[in-house]
Each structure stands twice: as C-alpha cells, then as structure tokens.
Length: 63
Picture 1 (cartoon, rainbow, N blue to C red):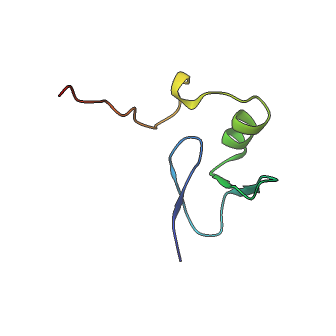
Picture 2 (cartoon, rainbow, N blue to C red):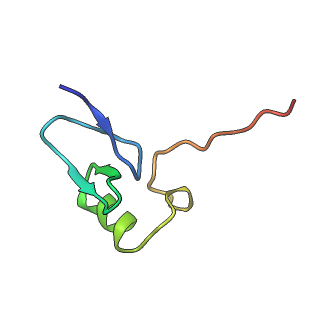
Picture 3 (cartoon, helix red, strand yellow):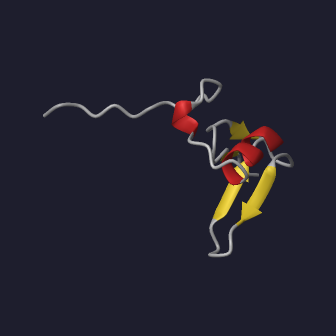
C-alpha cells in the first residue's frame, strides 16, 4: 500500500481515503479532504497564501 500526499496542502493521505481527481490531460491530483479539493479546483486558490496550509515554503540559499 502506498501513502500519497495531498496535492494542495501536502498532508499524507492514508490508503482508502481521500479524493483522486484526473484532469483531461491525464494529470492525477490527490486530495486529503473535500476542503482541499474545492479550494484547488473550484476556487483556484494558491496554497502558499492560506494560513491553514501546512506546506512548507522552499527557501533558496544565497551562493
């Protein structure tokens, strides 16, 4: 069994739960909850601008 991560918030999705959304171009998006699904698909929200998202921002190091 494989544990996937949410395409919106980055939270791990246990086997047998979550929503799998397949776009017309064949891209597979997996969501942990309906809240993440609606925020991403219906409202086109940017997860970096929401406070309830646990996804960490990548910080670039100066050379």
